[in-house]
Length: 246
Image (tube, rainbow, N blue to C red; front, top):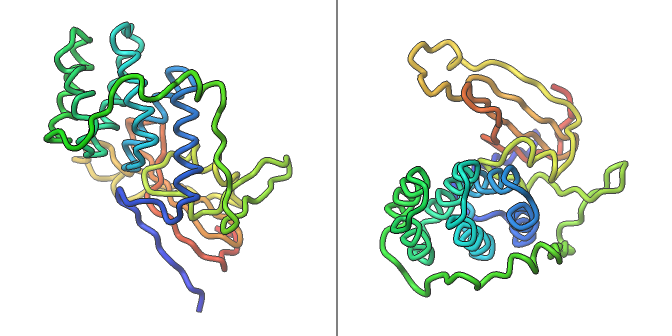
């Protein structure tokens, strides 16, 4: 009988310190080296995975503080997601950051989401994050590549790029993140769920799922919503006996 470990993460820390380093570094790179699209994608993933790393969240806080005073209309949605990501951390360290945005003359939408995030965090706790504590330009220039540990040796694809094992994946990540971190699956299988036929599923949630099969590693189940172009991880199944066939 095959030994299958079902890993369902709901805002928990990653399984290994190395996993946190690699995933967290990916978010830092997106926040410091990318444009609006990359920053938004990083913020959404930080929010959906319940990222708790202060190293990552400090970078997000600095991005918000530097960008909101001169934000254009095209920046508001991105920065709103950054505010939501900070709020979902439930870390009182970012109370003053969000409070500053709420009391500012920033766009009404951004202030609304910052206020919601502030209510999620609650009271200020511990040392508050201060603007300038993170040097975004230095991170942009350096890249700060994470060093892999001996316990988790990255696999090499045909192109020579390093890829990680499935234990680095967590619930809430986008399917694109999965591909970027562990590479293309051996095979995929997509099917509609019963929710696709429920007339009162107003949020159009979980209408279909795609299973990413990785031979010798396991499976990643991704859920598709009707109103989003991004599919997100719903479940990770670690199974060394995975054949890779649907």
